[in-house]
Image (cartoon, rainbow, N blue to C red):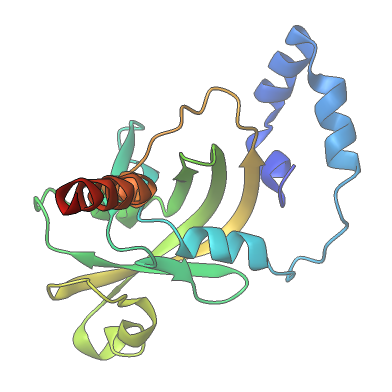
Length: 205
């Protein structure tokens, strides 16, 4: 169990369902074994920070005024979202389809849930936090060098800074391995090199 995730996600109703389906004791033992960390302890350790910095996409859920959840996919070069310190992470927001659903949701409810997926290694990190929006050139200036990875183009409209409340690493069950084009090309490059060498040998005969 990750940092404080059970404390926030396992509401009374959730615990009743765990009891009804026979998983309550196991999760109770996991929560009892967690470190007794102070309230100001870092939420993001070295493992979480490195995992987040290596991602080229993630999913962020927010909740609107009508109570409906909304899940948004965010993508960019690896490192476009990263830890700012042990309790905060951030990313720059560039102009997209201009629906501003997440932005509007955060105006009335700053709670967010983030999913970070490593499909090749079947690893998933869940995060609960509170998001704040940073807008305006003066406010954005100190964040730009921290949150602008190489390869990111365009002018950011704002930044999202998320104060982390809880994290949890999921088991790999049911995560189907998937690979990006760059990962596939890297994996098959030795085959291409070998084919080229054999073709050169044949041509030289």
